[in-house]
Amino acid sequence: MKKQLNDQVALEAAASHSYLAMASWAELAGYQGTASYFYAQSAEERDHMLRIVNYMNTIGAGAVIPKIDKPAAASFKSVEDLIETALKNEQAVTKAIHKMAQTAQKGGDYATFDFLSWFVKEQVHEEAQFEDILQKFDTIGRDGVAVNEIDKILGARNGGGGTGTAAPAAPDAA
Ligand code: FEO
Image 1 (spheres, rainbow, N blue to C red):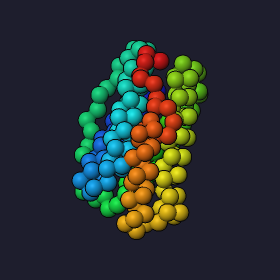
Image 2 (cartoon, helix red, strand yellow):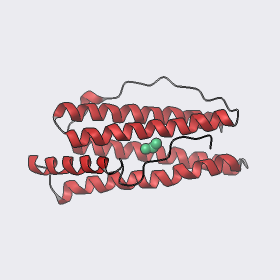
Image 3 (tube, rainbow, N blue to C red):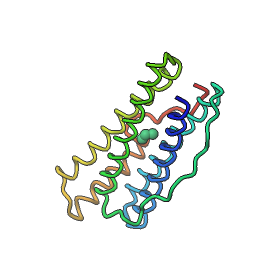
């Protein structure tokens, strides 16, 4: 369980780093809405990481702060590409969370199982929001005007609280 939780700390840190690279890419490419959206996503992922660090230290499991690899920012091609990459990211995170929940349940670790339920719900929300954005490329389009429109939508979402719903509460001792 402890190894899985530490792996998750690393996964959330990598997600935060990856979204930061996406935000920076978008900013340089002139997509201000997308940039602010991904800056907010990056901050959220850091919150997720802190939740786990906090929880592990509270139960005496000793969180390990990981080294983070450099994200592949140079290979980003478009705003749609960012969203597709982010969705794949989230799907991998969901799998890892579900695996942890299974381990916790099988091991009778109900405290950790309960702790993870917030993440299970959060992943449903996160996958849905990226799927929703991806759909917009089908409905609005992929030409310059359409992508600018989607960029504005992303910027407005961020202004509305980052992910379209209330931002997660600050990490606590769980
Ligand atoms: Fe922390 Fe987006 O999963």
